[in-house]
Length: 474
Picture 1 (tube, rainbow, N blue to C red):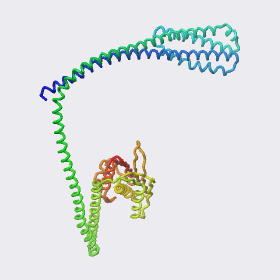
Picture 2 (picture 1 turned 135 degrees about the vertical axis):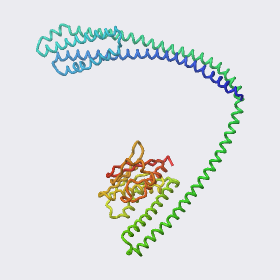
Picture 3 (picture 1 turned 60 degrees about the vertical axis):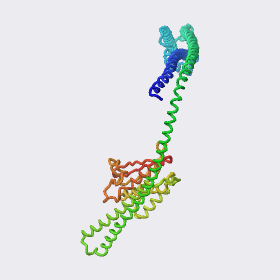
Picture 4 (picture 1 turned 120 degrees about the vertical axis):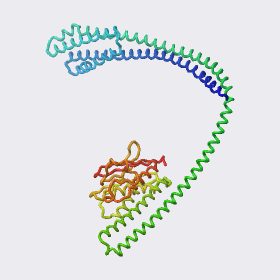
């Protein structure tokens, strides 16, 4: 396609979009105006209906007050005063709501002022009747005079006037709403017909122009698609090559790890063996300082061997393929704690394990996880009497969290950010042995299962580790 063709194509496309858009916006404006009129008319009709409903409620409450007062004066029974008093409590709120429904027109305010004045006049008359009745006065003459009835009739007349005017206004508003709806339908229909006709003509013209450009651009698109497919083929070939290289590198790394492990263990075993032989054969001849240094030599060899084991385990956890299957974490935790008790049968540790904790994951990796978490809990409660280790689960925001908690020495949360990094220790090796690899291994296992792990602790008050396992992630 020549260089000028894309610009012309965009120009045609812009015209094809802007003209219909402008016509549709104009139609939307007309419809919005019509809908606004319709909504206002319907809102006015709704307010009028609310006003009529509240008007009838006010009328009923006035009747309750009148009949309640009359019944009490004729019978003297206090039960008749209950509707009189209840209606008197509700009437102010109903009248206020009625006034709000009527709106703020001067004529309507005059009606409400008149209603309130006549209502208060009747209330004063009713209080006077009750006062004479309670004092033993001639209340009957006051009733027979018809003054109370005249006042109530005046109130009813005011309510009738308000009701008639409100109904008339509701009728007018209903007609306005009907007219607005018809207008909106008529205008919308005519405008839609006009816009449709214009768009059909204009679209036909634009489509003819665009079709002429399509044939020219189609060849270029096919050429680009062929080039893209060729590029994808080359990319897939490179990915396959890199995958093969990575697989080979992983195998070489595993071979190297085991080779290093064997090469490092041999001199370590020799160091430990010669040190033990020196201790057995020449121990009585060595000074106390020599014995101390020999002991430190053996301890360092032991720590180095443990460090090699932990590093190999961390490497295997990182590379191992996750074989998902149903796993009983409670049974795994019980087995791990039994092994810990067999190593130190004299320890007095209370272990609480929630039964039947199911999970889905790699049983071998999950055992490594629990061995490290429960092993740490066992280790860091060793200097506390009444040691307690817990393993349970709880649900937070719909996610199952597995929890290992102890009441050991804890640690300072200021260093919690380094907790899961290799070789990071929260305590001195002289206080608690270890390599600083265990929690890094735990985090790798949790991440391999698509979960997360966090820790909370207080120095001297124990630590709590929470982790999640998600089946949907590898």
